[in-house]
Length: 294
Ligand SMILES: Nc1ncnc2c1ncn2[C@@H]1O[C@H](COP(=O)(O)OP(=O)(O)OP(=O)(O)O)[C@@H](O)[C@H]1O
Ligand SMILES: [Mg+2]
Image (tube, rainbow, N blue to C red; front, side, top):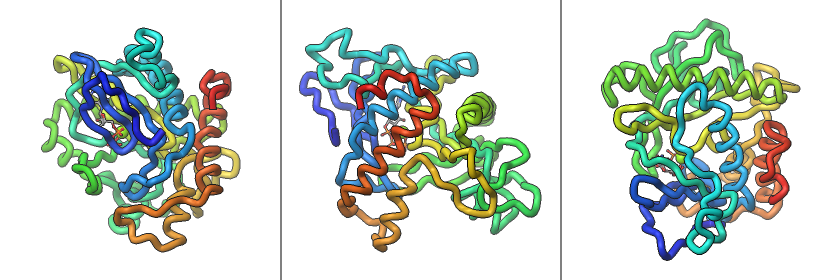
């Protein structure tokens, strides 16, 4: 599914991956099979991806409820009204409508990506000084909160330090977001490592309802996180992952200029990417019923 279509519902918008419909004080979120790379949506869907993302997010929403409340109300909207939501089984959720906090709440437990680039230049990431001698995929002494701005469509998010985050959303909210994000990361990373997965870093989104902070959007999926197999983890080199790194590498190999339109993917890249996403759910939650559907 590249785009959902619900003629009787009010479409609020389409994100890179999710379509949002307005249900009054609630939202219907539909995870499609769209995949974005370098902030551009690719023309080919990854079959089953939206179902995997939904199953994995719901799994984590359930597991982390003790850390912070989340937006999830009903995982099965088609059951409540099949005439309205017929074909969305496994990819749609009904959620509480929140006011999104305008920060990407990134937490890093390991050094890679933009964090590593920043560290190599300055010895710190988002204003947090780190010990000398760290390298690609090094474990950090403590998980760190490295927020970034929420850039408008088509633009890239920018890392900010904590003071920068405070100036965007206020010190009180930034502090609550930071503490919740780190607590969520710790809880999830401890669970995942028992299943043979390192959560190297992840991005949460939060919202407020009547001033109360809740976790929204998706949580701890291969789209929002870097998952590495624990087995074979070795600092000093780039790690195999369960996400679209694979697609990114292929796009780089054909020297695509990262400007839309993105090229079509070869069928084997699509199939291998779909298998990666599925594998993340298999490892983290092998008994998940969604695995029987894809
Ligand atoms: N409970 C909620 N209340 C209000 N808005 C929400 C809620 N949950 C998710 N959203 C918003 O719905 C959209 C989900 O779409 P999607 O995940 O495709 O976004 P996106 O384009 O990938 O952006 P990002 O990369 O920042 O997640 C996001 O804009 C998110 O902030
Ligand atoms: Mg999102």
